Length: 156
Image (cartoon, rainbow, N blue to C red; front, side):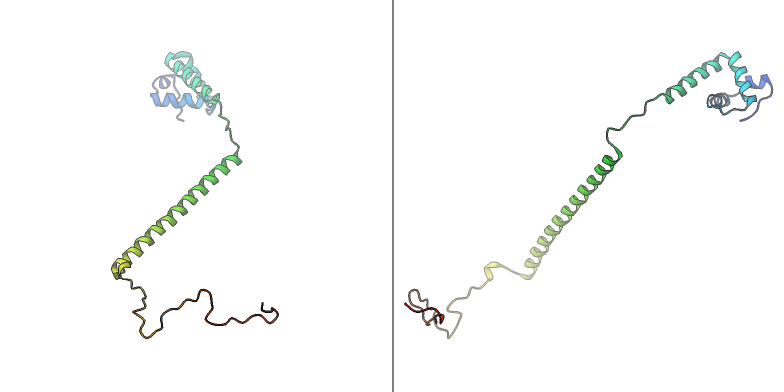
């Protein structure tokens, strides 16, 4: 802080210099010489005294502002933060999987379109398409081949 030796220099301080000197005085950051200079200005300059009252009230008001107490503990808060991160990660995984499924569906549809795959073109196996084979016979009451019994079980 700039030292002012004469009383005339104290009266010619700029607004910023007066404010800085007064602020340092309120914060108890002045030398003994600066303290005397502030006392001199307070005794003789009503505007300086008014500024002192305003700054002092502001400083006291700031120191008396209550600090809000959190309703949740730091453990609960950190747990809530991590739960939210987990939810976001879960939603991200779901959206990636859903997007992958949709993309694979479009790739499959595109592939079938490009290769000309069409369900109407599928040929079903018919008896006419198999040449030289016997017709299919189904035995309902009598088996065509005798089924052997287990040696321990007798026939009735």
